[in-house]
Image (cartoon, rainbow, N blue to C red):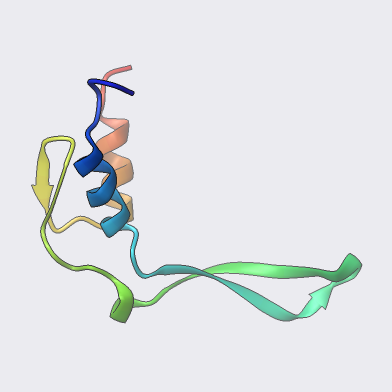
Length: 73
């Protein structure tokens, strides 16, 4: 919320999660459902330096989660 993160933090967070996608595996499962899995496509990831919640580095999604979990409640 206000005072806890900035719009820039949101942009940098999104950059860290680039390259991740969801794959729908075919054939369909019962009731016309798909079996889903996550896939990382490095050619679509932003490997540049990012600044998120005052931390700067070459972050990916796991790093962002670690930073969030370090924040006081």
